[in-house]
Image 1 (cartoon, rainbow, N blue to C red):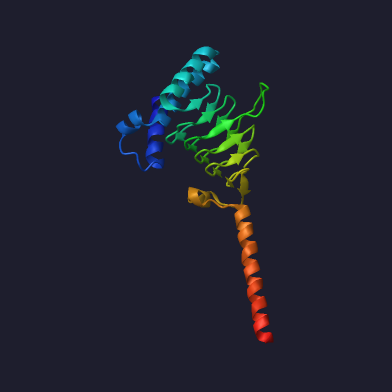
Image 2: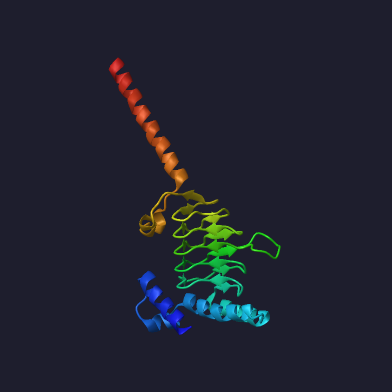
Length: 214
């Protein structure tokens, strides 16, 4: 447990430029507190102490503003930045090195007792207030833009932005890592820009033809 906490703290130093000391992280980062409490709750859940596990997750929600169902599987070095309003459902699975911003929902769409929440791969970024619904898969190294709504699988090394989310493919892991969250590619916007640029080009050619014919 202590080695996992040490990894978590080092990961926060790596991903949050506002972090200044171990003491600050240990006492002032609700995302870290929620992950630590979830690990206890999840162990109890697996041992079939269901009510106790739910009660620990309820206390964690009260203290941190982050709700993680004790049945959810959370990987190593998951960083919930700020975190207020984050909700992770019972059958959700979150991989290693995932960055989750405030207001993220990993929700279900079915009332049946089955896999009904998302599976998030390794090194994924989930932007503020993004929503991922159903038993969809978010591939490794993918980025989900802020306030996006994802209802279909997102491949590895892709971005998803908009409502409903539109997917851009064909990026390397290095390119994905250097994207600015406020400037994620939007395939619809890129297509519209291409059409408008072509329209302007044709208009200029028509004007040239008109000028030459005078």
